[in-house]
Length: 310
Image (cartoon, rainbow, N blue to C red; front, side):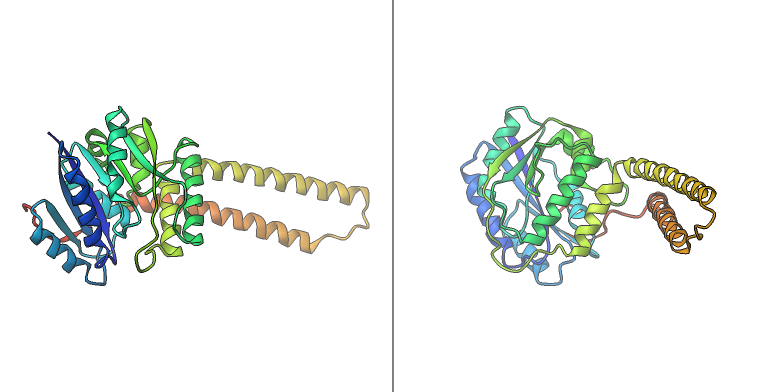
């Protein structure tokens, strides 16, 4: 009998999490051909989410809980759950009830067809305009930097086979980026349509700062294209500066009465100075990530394991 492991990152979900678990339980009663367990990872939520997880673990033998020592982010929470899971299929979903757990059979059926990973596709997302904008920026970035197929829709609700998960958890450096790890393991990925619900309560935990950090992490985590773009921009800027200097000298020779342009000189200095600082900052970001990785900075730190063998 095959087994499904559900991985749910938890943050500010003390009221919504029990509904998500109840929905999984009800759905799995109709999928008796599978065993299942659930991994709840508390990303140092400031509300009563941890107590909710403790209560759920106490009332369910197949629910495991983990509590982070500090907030490490959704992708780190996913990595913790993936690393402890042992199902033939692993399903990741949200804790707010917006991702329909009762439609998990659609993802599993697609895996059974032979795909290695399956992402839920939403025809009508119930996120805010700001969150949707962040998703679009992230989608563009993954397409250009990570080689994501243009027709592949990426969401937080997905399922993957065991061998894909095993390859993902081999990544032990800081700054994990889930879609980058999936694309690194396989390109045999499909979409299935599912509904997207309105949030039951509260607001998304993704602020502008967190969305930008997520986007920049994907921008630099699995690709050297930013450095190549920086090289190309530097070459174009140098060529533009050379041509402008040639134009200035030629103009002076043709008409000696033309005054030397202080404004144009300052504009050129500011432009090229800014470009240099931008490129140095980008290089510094890569060097900093290498430094942090060499210092073995952890993806996450687990303070407490609940209903799990140590």
